[in-house]
Image 1: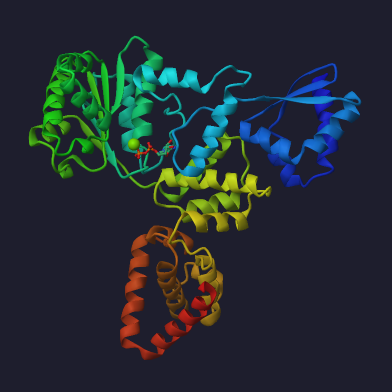
Image 2 (image 1 turned 120 degrees about the vertical axis):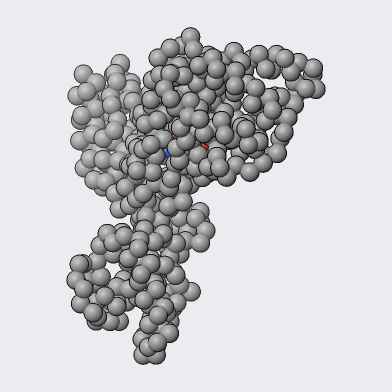
Length: 462
Ligand code: ADP
Ligand code: MG
């Protein structure tokens, strides 16, 4: 019954709004039940619900009134969104809002409950292997982490040390290990602790004269996950205590997992004996994700949120934000927030405007595409030739000049520039930059061309 009602409603809606809006906001809805004149539909997220209420409430009312008569009502059931730690201001704003609402959610899962779950062992259930996208950048770390999760304390990866820059997934990965172990064997005692917290707990225990209970608490765990050990830098006493806990756990065959923002050998201010122990097991680094991985991560994120973003926008974000994953997620959330505030749909124009505000140095006016267009016109070659294999001299020069400006005027990495020029690798780009610099030194006519182009491109920037 409710399925038929909903199907008819959809038909009504479909005729009245753009195809894109329809597939974004209506296709993901599932009808749940219809009782009397009330139809209940399930939407993928709170955000989704708010959007529908803001934009389509009248249309929906019309549609169901036709089906269920005057006074027909619509009720929503929101699929509960899991809490995630705030990443940017925009994210935390949105999450706070969601948490308020979650308290009244039909599933009865509320923020307080999630908080309780976390307090037990500080594991945040949203970080799992399932939602940790694999790429070349993290393959070793991920598979070592998974091996450890399956057999904690048994593999030779003890300790497991994951290192890498900010926002590249260290916390996610090691929390994923903890969550996996807990789901397999709830009796295992798993503690996740940030090094800063560990330090503070230790200092408190000194003050309160209960260092012993601090020590025995940590000695009693099966899996110790210590996040951001670089924080122990120059904290002699805390390092000392950790050294003893480490030895005890290791001898007892308990698993130790750590993260750090740099390789163990670069951990300045940590005692040598500690650092040398870190190297006993396996050390794996997380690197910046490649373009394809960034695409996959964005897709995963918007899928989780039940939101549609056009492919070209996803590509644009993935091209532009190549620093780290936290930033990438922040941009996506901010984009969605803007779209909802301004009551527009996410498109390329909006993405360009939003990214300009978020990612500073990015010059979204002069993009690689524009540079290629301007340069190829200037040299009378086809824009497509710049991406093609051809090695004709005039095309090679135009291509190199376009690469040179892409480096200067955009925020793209060498790798990303290469990608935009027919998938060439970053060493080709480096070579191009050198050639252009050399030619400018030796060939005044060439130099003049470059200056002319500079003027053209500058007109666009200012
Ligand atoms: P770090 O601890 O290295 O600073 P985090 O683990 O906090 O980084 O990751 C930052 C954000 O990026 C988190 O929201 C995390 O879920 C997300 N993230 C990182 N790596 C991945 C990945 N491989 N797949 C999906 N999300 C990721
Ligand atoms: Mg972290």
